[in-house]
Image (cartoon, rainbow over all chains, first blue to last red; front, top):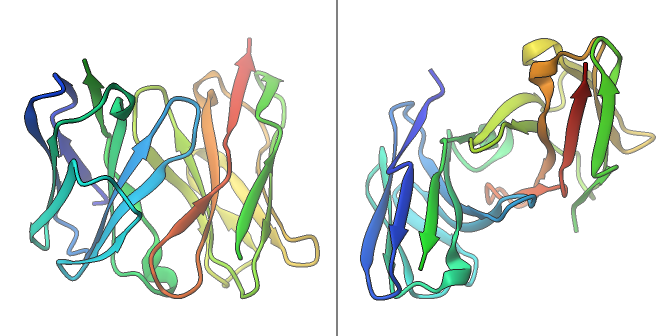
Length: 115
Length: 114
């Protein structure tokens, strides 16, 4: 089973709202990722968690706040977003971050619209 | 620094024709290479991967890719296109340093005509 689940599928929020995206995997993977994808573009890496510790932050604005409560769960807390943050947010997981363990499996994404 | 170039942002084939999507990479170390497919309004699905075992890699849905070190290429092929193959395809290379980072190409949109 290579399933990564994400909720919600769609989210509309105002610029003053606080919301959270959730990602879950039950494959025993120890690395989890958040990506942002604009239309007709490749995914852009935002954060990497390895063994529940934040290992990479790609200079993402502080209005995006990741959280990894346990090895199966990854959240992305959103606050005071801008309209340009509207995008598809993808979660991925992998066994690890070295060698062949790097194979990443993606969830279906959350389509976010900021008004 | 590693990079990926996908030649052709848009490829159009007739149903039943050969599909060839091109990917060239640059890497200072032996790479791990991946092809992903993305259907409209969905996430990325792993088609196949090269991790230094066999140079001809078979994936799902009848796709395969051949790793050619001399040409630094990892082109994706399928002998006979199906309407359901219409999607966005991304080639990616894993970045050295065991960070888990993937470097993606810009993507190729495959259109399949009846």
